[in-house]
Amino acid sequence: MKNIILKVEGLKKSFQQPDKTELTVLKDLSFVLQKKKILAVTGASGSGKSTLLHLIGSFENPDEGDILFEGKSILNFSKKRINRYRNSDIGFLYQFHYLMPELTILENVMFPSLIKLFDKDKSRERGIELLKSVGLGDKLENMPFQLSGGERQRAAIARSLINSPKLLLADEPTGNLDWRTGEKVFGLFSDLIKDKELSAIIVTHNEKLAGLSDNKFFLH
Image (cartoon, rainbow, N blue to C red; front, side, top):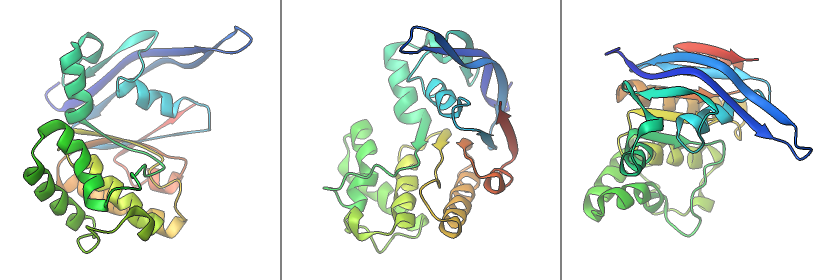
């Protein structure tokens, strides 16, 4: 268990549809994620990939099953502990960058750290370091509209790392990018994960990108 950061056991998740029937999205889903490994999750639209990330991120609870982070069930976390889990232990990266248009790139990256630390100097220092690591050291004061799609997603990667998470959850992180740009962004993302010795679960439709991960699961 020492080498396992996440263990998912027998997950089931259903949703009630408008006609009152129940749609089961995930059923009897189990897997483990080792530390410092990248797991890709593929499957058709509607197979439950994003729902799985929402459950691991603790934004929804499963109907059945358990999710163990570093050996402890997140379903039993106190309110204080679950907030720390969401803000510090895990980082999120989405298909759309969700950068705030009224803030500079550096301010966007700093924002989650300011919420956690309330220390502007430390947040700024960390933000600059991360933006340099994703090749945006010369774009610190730019606004989001001044960056290309690939650059905005690289800024989002920096933001996802600002609180030094142990586990990254990425939902179609290159889905809005053309193939060439997406491949570059994914390569950068993968290199940063390995460089910082993180673990990651990446949801993607792109089989080639999934093949670059350490392991791959297909949701039916």
